[in-house]
Image (cartoon, rainbow, N blue to C red; front, side, top):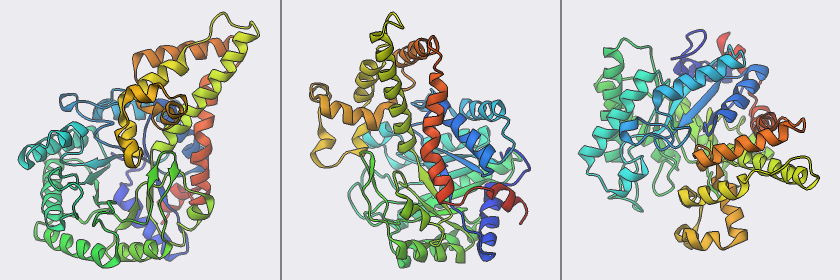
Length: 424
């Protein structure tokens, strides 16, 4: 569970809320674990800057093999936990880090939603996934039953959301207790704009109704409740309209019930908006595709260096990483979720014929293909060619990923937070 002094994520958040009363405001960053390089970059920064890490994995990214596995490093929950611990040990990280399930629940795997699985079957698969999370030592589970394929495009039905949320949370708590495992935290709510928790009144209505149902069953209140602050990520941009007034209203409401406001889709934010997160009292914000894109960009910069080495006669033959990564990334079709309008229906073969569009889609989706065997081979060739010329390619990639993470660390006042919450 927690990895150093036994401080659970729930206790960490409660301590952060206490620190707010003393004038210390910080916003945790939930990092989408797109690769081992990203893990190493995160641990090195957290070690040096003294802040807690949250690694947020969706079911598409990390899941049981029998449920389809994950596209990131082929991780199931146990391999994910083991590899994260290995990375922490490799950089001598002694602080706090938390394994977090992002968007757990029914229909959260693309194939389950596309197949329009009936609710009973979808809930059963969700429970199997959660059980694997619990057994692997996850610290936070997001309970998100809002991807009902029979309600897509309609206003989110809060009655159903609350019913299914309580059922799943109760299942997880019972399974945790059966195994004598330590306290885990829960995240509930939705960032969906089609009737999600966008207003203070709807947000409080959800909290109050959820609290009643949880109290009836002796279940804990969640650690985080997700609210819509106006964020929206498309392509490689923050295209939403972040709303300070909404953020402070939602965070104040959440704190009244002893929980933290969680913001999703916080990628590609500018410094001005990030700095306003502290006076808005946002407890945590998720960032995922941005860091994957930064790793892709690092590889493409190294490819340019490698091509120059070949031109200068310093290597025999450059890798074919650019072409292979581009082809594989586009064929994943996972980029569709970041597109808008008619672009969501673009055909793969048409994209491959369009140099400009191909480059754009590679930028947003290269990380979806990092685990492809051919891509791995080309990265290995790239590193070898660079190393023969005294260039440490992997170190460059890690340092490149650190740049945007460090921006969030500094703007969101994370430096020294671990020490602060441990000493509340």
